[in-house]
Image (cartoon, rainbow, N blue to C red; front, side, top):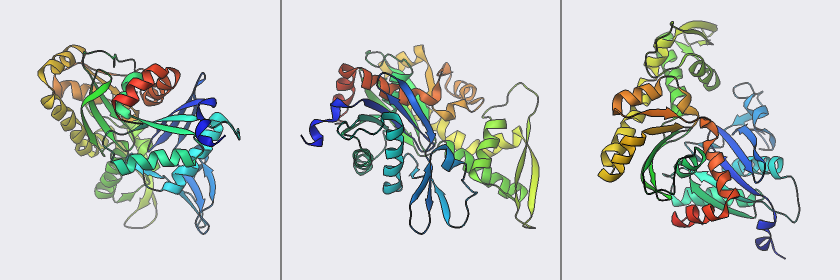
Length: 345
């Protein structure tokens, strides 16, 4: 027997292959892998040393002979070989090693990726050990995982804010009726903080430190609470020496203004382009936010103010895409509808 006859003998895996993190849902078990999408390699040989949390701990801290790399950028594969190896390691952790049983996988992919980028994701999964690989649009998977009625004729609107991409989509009848895909998301928010501190305080910090500041005091809208502060530690660009600066939540909100405005404008554009019948459904149901970026404080309030619609954050926003891909794995009849109607075979 060849490998092509074997995939359905192995377990099904639903994978959220994200710029920031990769989550793997195993058929019958739920999410068993939730790791940063980071790989550490030897510079000279490009041999992989570690993947996931261990590799993320090395970002910005590696010795000269090692390098910590994020092989996905803006929601797509930037380094095919490292993505393949990272996927292989995560599949082994989730499925184990079975020489004659290859898992079949469903992978969430941004709606805005090209055909070439889509094939790259599928090929990376196959070379990483999958017996069969199919793709599902991330907004559709997220809507399914968040419990929205994707099979209904009534429309639902979802805003998926990941690490590399933001997807704003209208879902109806098992498909995406309208979508705006931006390569402005969590990474851009971190970059905006780095840029602001460099410009206003002559302080250079790394992306990981910027993310920590965003999580600690970041917000998109003024909140009714005591002003928060955080210490930004990095290198003084004037003296070259280590330096710490006390930063307020107001400053970070100012730093995030441009990328946040881009996301809000995308939501408003989709609403303006939505057909009247579907718009009526959205006016009734409101907007659902998923993804790690949905946890930015005040973003739901800002969207509600800007659109006049009710906005809520999913109960488990970070895991929605993985849950949705996993639900397709668990329910083959739903998989056929979702995959076939959207041409993701």
